[in-house]
Image (cartoon, rainbow, N blue to C red; front, side):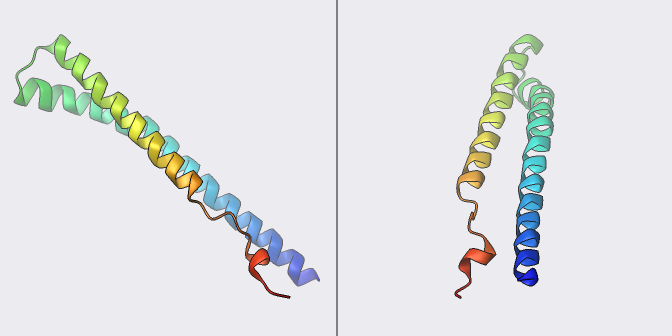
Length: 94
């Protein structure tokens, strides 16, 4: 009985750790990638390669950042909905 309770607690704790790692990963991605891609696309791509003015390149770089946010949110939703929600103790046959 005690081993069963311990395995349930450890299984729940492992699942909680996994959920927190996923949440932290996507939260950091939401902060880092849109900001990085905004400045990178503005200076290197739109101004450097395409020769667009600074004001117009800011406008287009904002679309890149917004698109990045939507992609990250979509990946988070996909990850959340495809996550395995069964407990290891539920799979045991008694």
